[in-house]
Structure formats: structure tokens, C-alpha cells
Length: 293
Image 1 (cartoon, rainbow, N blue to C red):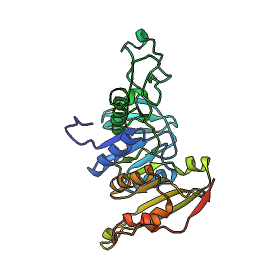
Image 2 (image 1 turned 90 degrees about the vertical axis):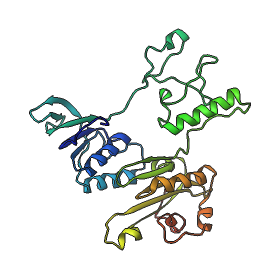
Image 3 (image 1 turned 135 degrees about the vertical axis):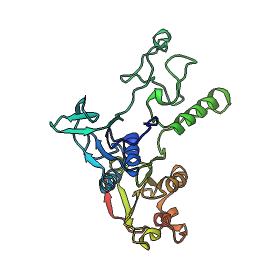
Image 4 (image 1 turned 180 degrees about the vertical axis):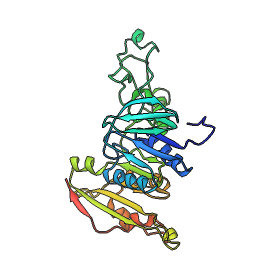
């Protein structure tokens, strides 16, 4: 993708995770015709369902052809480039095909067998909460462990491991409440549990809002922002923060501090809004949209 010397007329991206979604939006914004092919009914499997559905609609509104619940059966050459045949029998002609279906840890041929380390079913190196393998003095961090495959997570895992082994401050790294963003158009930011995950653990109050931001509404823009807070009904602790819209990654990065610190909905309610901003809606939602779990 990064070595392309000209914009393809039509690109097919297979897979709707971070890479598939982001590059589909990039190519479309540059003017290419784009088709996104994915197995599920919506992009970004594993994210909050309300975010997934809104990303789906936003991408379709940009003119990206969304082909969900299908699998690619074959890719062949054609006069114009390639033909992608799907398992429903349909065919898509294009100049570029991007395979963004994910990766497996590259752990083959690095000597795990000589150390007596048995990798997991996907080739991952299995470790404990201190990133230690089953062999003394052998550690693994990052994507090769297949825990949370994000660059900042790999850095944080390594710091925790170094502190534990060499810094005199033994501490595990916990993979809950990891903030993340997808730089789609519009982008999303999220930290904590999804609504489905939260409802499996406790009774949850769901707060949500959707609106046109003032800075674009005045100019006749149709862009919308969606926000959601998930709150433990018993403890009042905020379990998840989800947002779709401009500046979502920046806003959620800041709110992740509050979630990690154990902030409650009462803390959000007592926070004075900065007006006029989009972020102020996170401290102005007073009535729960629903209670689940």
C-alpha cells in the first residue's frame, strides 16, 4: 500500500479490522472506488456494537461499498487487474486487492523448541501476567504473545517486565482498560468494556447521545458525533467510554485516565463542562438510555 505510485481506480480490501477500515477510508477520501469485504455483519469485530453499526453506516455514506457476511473464494487476474470471487458467487473487478485479514505471531524457527517452549495454537508465546514464559529467565512481550496487539501495549508490557526484573518494583501488566482508536472517517475512540461485555458482568446503566457538533452544524454540515458511557449500577463506576466523531481519539485518551483511576458517574456529573465543545457532552448526560444486565 505504501509503495503505490498511483491511485487505483478501484480497490478491494479484504478484512474489516483496524487496517482494512482505515485504508478503505484513506483510499476513498483520495477518490478511489472502494469495496470492503468482511466476514461479519459489520466492521470492527470486538468493538462496541453501537460503534460498529455507526462506522458501517458512515463508511457506506462516503460511497464505500460494504460487502458483509461473505468470504473471498478466489482472486484471479483480469484485463484490468484482478477479479475477486466471493463465496456467494458474485465477482468484483478491481485494480488493487489488499489482504487485511490479520496476522499470526512470527514465532517459527526462532528456537522455541530448543528452549522447551510450546507455542499456542496460533503460534503465540504463552506468558503470565509478568510476561514470563514457562522457562525461567525467558520472557516475551508484544504481538508475539497475541494478547493485545497494539504498539503502546507492547511498550507498556516491556516496561512492566523491566521494572519487575531489574527495577526493584515487581508489577504485573493488566490488559483491561486499554484505550484504543480507529482512524476511520470519522474516527472512533474507546476504552473499557463494550456494552455486551459489561452486561455479562453486572447490571449496567447505559448513557448515550448523538448530535451534530456546533462547529459543523452552523455551516450546514451533516457530520454526527456519537457518545456512550457504561456505568456499573451498583458501584456507579464508569466501565466503558465509547465515541465516534471528530477528535474521538484525543478525547478518549484523556478520559482513559479517569476510567483507569476508577472514576464514577458522580465524578463525571460534578465536572464542569467546557463550552462550546463536543467533549462536554460526556459530563452532561444525566438520564440513562437503558439498563442492561
